[in-house]
Image (cartoon, rainbow, N blue to C red):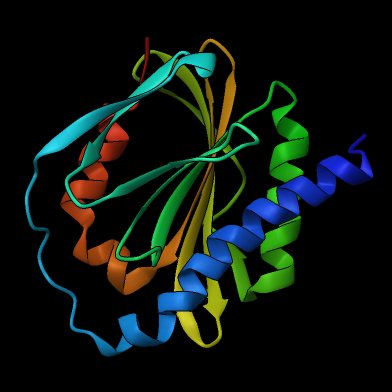
Length: 177
C-alpha cells in the first residue's frame, strides 16, 4: 500500500517533469525541430542503483536531494527521471496517477511488457497525451539493476523526434555496473 507521503513524492516527480515541459511547451511548439547537434557524451553513474549511462552533449543532469536523477534537454522540454526504489510497483502507480491528473487524452500503448535491456530485466509501458494542447509522449520503465530503478520519460513529441538519434544512444547506453 502506498503511504500518503510516498504518493505525494511520486506526484512531485510528475509535477517536476510536467513543469519542465510546460515551461518550454509554447516556445518549443513554435520552433522548427533541428537535427541533433553532436553525439559527444559523458558517462554518468548512479552508484546506489549500480547503473550508468552516457549523457549526450548539451543534456543536463540534476541529482536531487531525494536521490532522484533527472536528465533533461531542450530546457526541460524532454526529461528522464530516475527513481531508485525497491517497491517499484508503488512508484509506477504514483507516476501513472500524476500523469492522469496533468494530461488530457492520456492513452497507453497497451499493457506493460517485460523484456531484457543490456542484461537487466526491463518492464515498460508507454503512451501519449496532451499537455495544454501540445502532444507529449511518456514512458515508465523499470530496470532491475543492483536496485530497482524506475524511469519516467516525458517530453514534447516534436522535441523527442528531433533528438531521436541522441535519445536512442542514451537509452542503449543504460547498463548495470
